[in-house]
Length: 244
Image 1: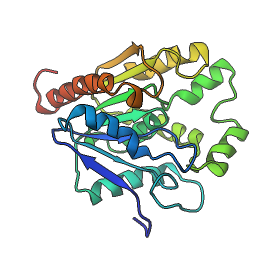
Image 2 (image 1 turned 45 degrees about the horizontal axis):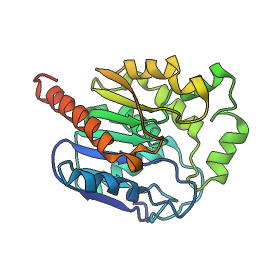
Image 3 (image 1 turned 180 degrees about the vertical axis):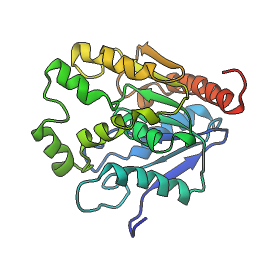
């Protein structure tokens, strides 16, 4: 894509296809696709799961400059075109990957059948940080750290606001948010009413607290698969016009 290689993987069968968006990559040793392989093994191929490693991470090539929201969505589009997947999809976002999933959902609402977020970031997070007085993703120091100094080179604040400003395009599909018992060490923010309000915007939006760590896709893949199947079934019912 644009002269650069992006590492992608699809495995399994079933419909709708699941798009897995991995969390933030802190260093070059983190291979985003490897995180989904624990779920693939536990799943035994019942779901078709496609995943990729974002530019500058894992086995994908590096590029110069900060990645824009349009760049991030375009990369997803390019990967899906390359692997001949046209949707609709169930979006599975872990940690920061939930913000990427949310951006894709408002960019292509017609291609989304359902969403499962694993203790993830959401577009409304920058509002949550402001409400609680945290130095969050939109502080100048943190924006520079994310956009300029990190491996990912993504401005989280810009991506969150980009998706939040398009929230009226969120698809009319089911979304489940799995909240870890203590995901971030930020106390009440993990259970913030603004984050729950984001979940309620979906049809239906289900907030579920689970006894699992933040990285539940690696630690408890069976739990994730259980909820993925529920979202997938609701999404198929919505697409077919049948009961969900």
